[in-house]
Amino acid sequence: MAGLVRTVGRRFFSAKATTGLTGMAVAKDPHLALRVLYTKTLAALEKLPKDAAYRQHTEGIINDRFDLVKTVPDVAELERKINCGQIEQVIIQAEAELSLARKMADWKAWEPLVSEAPEGQWKWP
Amino acid sequence: MAASLGRLLHSSGNLLRNGARLKCQPLHTAARALCSNTSGGLTTIRPKDEVMKNQLTVFGEYVAECLPKYVQTVQVTAQNELEVLIAPEGVVPVLSFLKDHHNAQFGSLADIACVDIPTKPYRFELVYILMSLTYNSRIRVRTYTDEITPVESCYSVFKAADWYEREAWDMYGVYFSNHPDLRRILTDYGFEGHPFRKDFPLSGYVEIRYDNELKRIVQEPVELAQEFRKFDISSTWETFPAHRQGSKPLMDTQGRGHEAPPEETPAEEKK
Image (tube, rainbow over all chains, first blue to last red):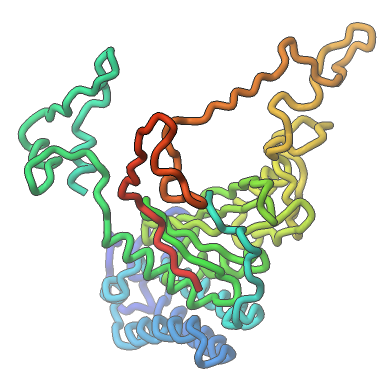
């Protein structure tokens, strides 16, 4: 149910008529948007230490999706391959991950535990 | 899964007047097949979902691995609910991670609850309940604080936190720093005190009445017609068999034995 799909010249016609979701406009060039976002995210992740688990997992996810974006030209096919909702939603997820990667560098979340809970704090009941 | 489906097919009014329970009568044979276990007996006990529990455990370990600076413990309750226990410095980082990360995508803040346990070192426990619509799952993030230590507001992460944090402030006195508008939300305009704290009395301290001479509402110390009665009822049944402290006698004074039931303990992975 991705709406009307027209595969004529993807730069001149949008690939579908509507996303079906209120307030979410159809992306004009999703491949370009995703390419830019993933490149920026990978650059932001470079600032984290190589052994940080967040960096390793996120780089894996981003590289997998980036490879799909580079190899699959058709938008509907790309949506199916990524399998995480519509391409506009994938773009929103990529934007979120980019902002998170930048903030993670500030927080330094890979460091060891900043403070232990006091004795008996988590005991229940 | 089959048992829960079977539950939906049965009516709920099964109690006879003397309190005995009717045997669960299936509506048709398909229901009997759905809610019977492999040995043929009917069962309406919630089945253990090991697959779900394993998935939640794996994801909990993933969160702990990505955020070692703030995550103190991760646990999965017996009802297959994932809880992440964090240090209070990490409220904004952990919630941002859970909202923005590809594998998490908990985009919805369902509630911020506060629990007051006066005997604990940090008496207030904050519980953030998040929901993921993409992955259809929930997660709970818990921190702690006391009356004077502020917690970073997560308004920058979830706009819904605005009123939830106002409620926590009004009812418990938990202060949130960098909140856009932290003021009372449920109590009366001149109300003093934080009503949901355990040391705040049930009747409150003041009552109001309309004064005819002054022609307005006046507040006066509360006077109840009957003194507050506290019944100290101790239950004959042990309420938390999995959480006994110290040794308990196996027999009570009447010589009845307490059999330890096969209990569920929450699976804990300590970091």
